[in-house]
Length: 123
Image 1 (cartoon, one colour):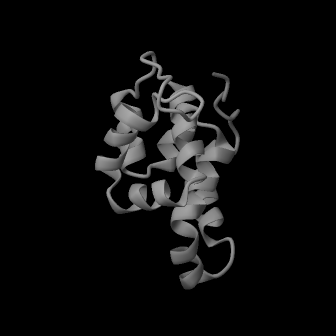
Image 2 (cartoon, helix red, strand yellow):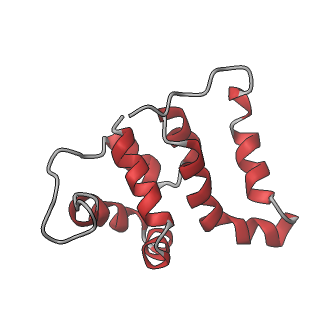
């Protein structure tokens, strides 16, 4: 797994409301756009770019499908994984079942990790 690139995606998209909305609206198109034109940028400028990183097929599909369990299992940073999906799902979940609803849903879906060591987040 390219943990660095997945974590960079989670970090940059979560912190930009426009990017987050694009990710919510058209995840497949947005992930491709991000991988080709946003992700390679270094230091947030148009001049410097990296050609080293790319998402694997599994990472790409997990991001497209908002599969936070698969991302966790592949070693995406837990906090970055949690915060982006709170930004996406907290309001719809909260309107149905109250505060911290998405966090409880995520915890339930990760219950099978309760007695295991968490995947390493080392890059």
